[in-house]
Image 1: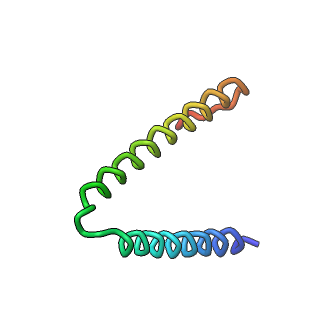
Image 2: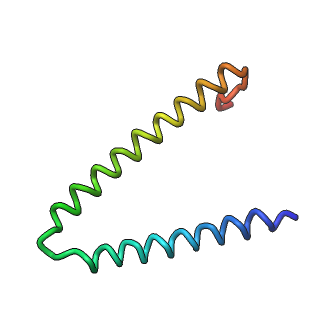
Image 3: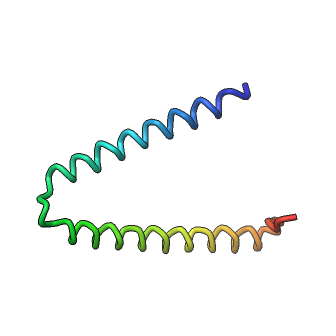
Length: 75
């Protein structure tokens, strides 16, 4: 029973990595070389939005855990 999470996590990682590779390759093939700056700018915006969303989710999780009385401190 201990092998199930390992197999599922490995499959999930491989599937997502493959999908990301082909998505990036397809978008790269669709674009022209003159649009590199626009691509970099858009990528930077997406990274910034993801990081902000990550911080918001972490804040919500820690706030909710504090309200519920869960101890998430590192020993």
